Length: 316
Ligand code: AVI
Image 1 (tube, helix red, strand yellow):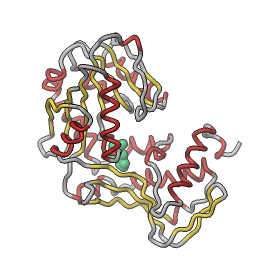
Image 2 (spheres, rainbow, N blue to C red; image 1 turned 90 degrees about the vertical axis):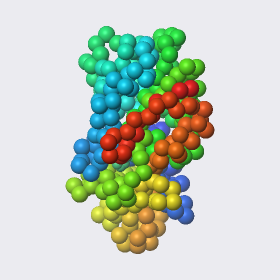
Image 3 (cartoon, helix red, strand yellow; image 1 turned 60 degrees about the horizontal axis):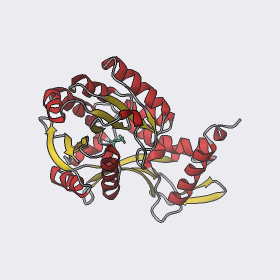
């Protein structure tokens, strides 16, 4: 069986459809969700440990140093519903300090992540009911009936909100409010606007881990969509878009070239780019505006001493 046959057929068809639409558009683009195959997830984990990538360690510092204040503000007896738990490390930190949490509900499309998060949380909070939900949390989904009437705390750390376009972020926040129900709260991690040099280094580290993460998308298209990208003819670029207050990742064609993908020929001019990800950074007032448009009220927010990152508690 060829490598191109390994991915589930439906997923491969969706990848090819997105690649054809994005690579034949006037400005070439690919949806960032395709960065996360098994190798992409491994590389993303490695990114969170490079010295330039401050978001993960700063958010963990806030969750640790402000644990008592966060736990008091959240209040007792809540079921924690985490959107995209990753390895569950942040949920384990949070659940260790919350007052009598009712349950932990990790939600992700990838069952492997759910298992890892569930076992980490089970260690941190023995006896806590863990009720994983396999679902794409960017779409409507139902919470387990077993949750009963316990009030909910949504948990969406990591600044993943920044990977949505602003309208998409409002849509996500609105759906989350409806899914979590009356009386819900949401604990949200959001990265803050800062000096472009700090941001560009965070998304183009010296070791080249982020470059490998970005270029893996072309390897994936070769593996799963039967494309013939010459990976060595592309390089990773991270650039701060000041007007839209976001870091953009691009793959830059180093020379004019053509690529075959699903029976189509795609032309690249020298220097032309594929836009692979946007990571929006927020000013507090802009984030508050997004939350308000989605029907949430700001209860509190916490930042680190350097003002790099922020954690928000919102009320439905
Ligand atoms: C997952 N997400 C919040 C990361 C970010 O910072 O936007 C993805 C990432 N891309 C490059 N480095 C990290």
